[in-house]
Length: 266
Ligand SMILES: Nc1nc2c(ncn2[C@@H]2O[C@H](COP(=O)(O)OP(=O)(O)OP(=O)(O)O)[C@@H](O)[C@H]2O)c(=O)[nH]1
Ligand SMILES: [Mg+2]
Image 1 (spheres, rainbow, N blue to C red):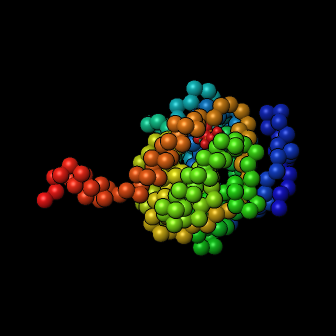
Image 2 (image 1 turned 180 degrees about the vertical axis):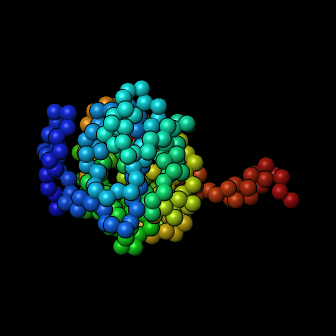
């Protein structure tokens, strides 16, 4: 069921955008860490942070050396937030740095461009408390939608989701969406060791390979509010494809194949 939000931001009225009914607080007794990667998001952060539910345990903002006032805006609006300066490059590296310092029971991954609605967090947490190890937001599950995705990206996402579902026997409806939540105990199975936008795929595949319980919740993706997307369809789509294949061909398989190909095996 959709309803209208009522946050005002930078002259834009967000009440025109749909968002889901959700409690405005996470349940007491569960420590929820929210990790937000930021790269030049000074204009978007105020609306994103305004939508965070009450009762969060910690907020971690991982900045990729923004050249605008992102860090200052974050410090002013949320003096309680932990700000981590990223040492490497890319969203994958930023999330890995954020996960490393999380001390809560649950981790939520949220974007800073205004596309993912922090008000949905309680529904992710509820699904985790109801038995899931890993909860994936989906724009294509029943009740989800996107005003942001282009026809080209929708097609690419569908093809890549189908490939993952075939290779890993999963039922993902939206592989390339960055709004996910999981119990901190899942982190050793993810071992996030990539740099770019393939990070969501890497996580989804490794969680599936570990046999963890995955639930999807519908999510509404809004348009990026201000600024430019950092994603390039061909470059990042290729990285996603390589990740899917590389994760299927395990290191052990490569070790057996390589000597045979070179005629080195006895
Ligand atoms: N710290 C850090 N954050 C990044 C980096 N690249 C992207 N981000 C953040 O990651 C989030 C997602 O990036 P976007 O550029 O919106 O990419 P996207 O949402 O996958 O693609 P769009 O649908 O085109 O917006 C945003 O909060 C960005 O600020 C990076 O190199 N370092
Ligand atoms: Mg975005």
